[in-house]
Amino acid sequence: EAMATLIEEGCKRIPGMEVRVRSVHDESAPQDVLWADGLAVGTPTNLGGISWRMKKFWDDWAADNWNKVDGKLCCTFSSQGGHGGGAELACTAMNIVLMNFGFLVFGVTDYVDKITTLHYGACIAKAPRNPTDKDICRVLGLRLAEWVAVFVDGRSDLHPLKTTKLLNAKAGEAESIEPKSKAATIPTDPEPKQTKTITTISPKASGPTAESHPGRVQLIVRISVPTRNQTPWKAMASELESYTRREPGCIHYAFGQIEDSATEFYVVEEYVSVAALDTHSNSHYFQRLVPAMGKISSTLSVQKVFPLSPQPLKQDKSLYLGLAGLVVGLTGGVIISKYV
Image (cartoon, rainbow, N blue to C red; front, top):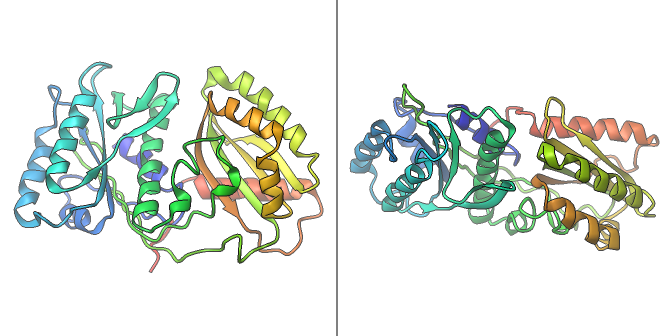
């Protein structure tokens, strides 16, 4: 269940996502599977395979729901007693079960740190206690939400290759994240209760674009930096900040660290126009520093924001505090109601 909660957090990093957590014992779980556009299915590793309760859920569910879920997006995750305990085997076995129903199963190629990735699903040992284990879960949830936005809502601008997957992608390519659909997570079946969860993502109306808002533009980028990489990363961030603040089209540019997090950082940016943002993205220092920073960190989310006020705030400090509050609001686990 701890993994499920973190995956839920990852899904909610794209606003408009409604998250539901269900166990194999919940009466609503079978219908929630049908309702959702995407699933993340979790099972404890049991002798290198799926727990018997999780397997029974799908055996029972098949009778009335065969041929009803073809094309739904799906990913998996598992907890094991210790590293090398078979969690990847359990995820692979779970993937095979889901493929039999017609789910489109995906892996994640991103590295959370230099030696940890999610090719077959999110795999950890015991509960997710350290920052890397927590990031593994959040990245899985975020990627599920991104794929739902891309393939269900048709939001090609939210493709991970254009947003969170590469920090050195043009920042201006990531637009306001406002999906219109549902995604679901079926998380762990923790021992001894053997539970499963579901997260769902609900519809939302389309939002502003660069064409409809030709004036100022802001970017809020959230980044995960392993502790051992923070010294060189902060040095490059400071250099990038110094260069960017000299740009004629830059109103505000500042890096910061997320409250109560040892590994998560953000950068808040504001420019006079999208053209000024593009100029920044094409600058020689951006092209040199951002790829280097991306090699020792991972981007968790990119938000493009179009300010409601016609003019920038007079005091840079006031703008900074206001935007920092927005970062906390967007990513701090605020409940987002279902859009109708």
